[in-house]
Image (cartoon, rainbow, N blue to C red; front, side, top):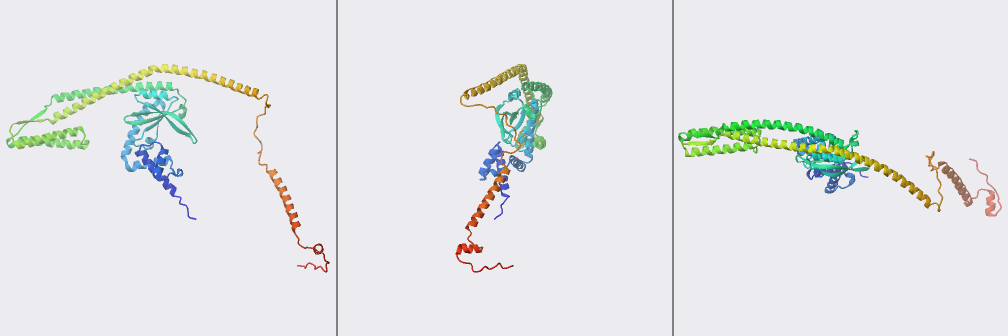
Length: 455
């Protein structure tokens, strides 16, 4: 019999895990089971017994990231984790936790940052996300809580800084701490956010003051700097050409220094390239015509100051816009905080009504059960008899099988069957063993009997 190849199933599982990892990373699949089934169909290895585990697929995804992306993927993961930490800090009242591919290191550009938070009502978390200015969309997700049991949990999808987030909400008892009402958690959350917002506004105000001072200084420097430089060409254009060559050399040196810090697409590099092109064109024109008149060229210092001034003004406008956004968010938070007492009162009334309705329901349920029992007695009074039997107890010995009974019956059956076989064999045996057998079967006289020879 040929020996069975035990290594083949491992190769099949590895191949399916690698293909499933590719599908999840390149096509954005999030469900492990569907990815594994599609991988099995692609490779024609759809046997369910050969499907790898989720952990094997995650290991294959991590291996792909290490081979094809390396340090770039690590930097991308750091950015995603920083984004997750910011959201977790803002939702600290709900004890958020990072899970999924971002935590395991298998996330890609198509992956969402998955968070788990804890609240008895998902509406409280939705209100907190709205207070943060995040447009959240609700969803439900089925998760396996036991080996043979799954449950649906609410959650929210939202985007922040071009990153997708999936926030699943679990009950308070899931984290093992004392339960905290949703409204109370919302009040603490809003108070913490208001305090953080005031601090951010103060920081932004200080930054605006610094930018205003820097912009004023740059404007004064720009006003005191000439926009152009007057260059006079000597005989044959030697002096003018020499001055232009000096400016071109200085510009090229500055361009080399900027390229060591920035890429060619940086605004400073592009501007300096344009200035150098203009200087080279002027130098070529001066050499061609060999004029002796005065030529005006742009002043690189003025251009640099102007560029810095424009950049500082843009940063100042952006900082002011950010401060206005922070103030608007603070105003929204104050409005929500003003509604928290009404929410608490409404929650208190709902809880009281729930307790009263629950007590009424229990009372009505007991009455219904009693009426059903009486009705069953009334309907069966003419057709039968009801006997109240005592409650069954735990037996002290097994009901079946009765081993002693089976042993005795087997022994008696063996005796009877053996005796019957002995009688039947004796009846069917026609062997001649004695002188009486000869007389009975042959009907002739016996002449002699030979004795048994001794051994």
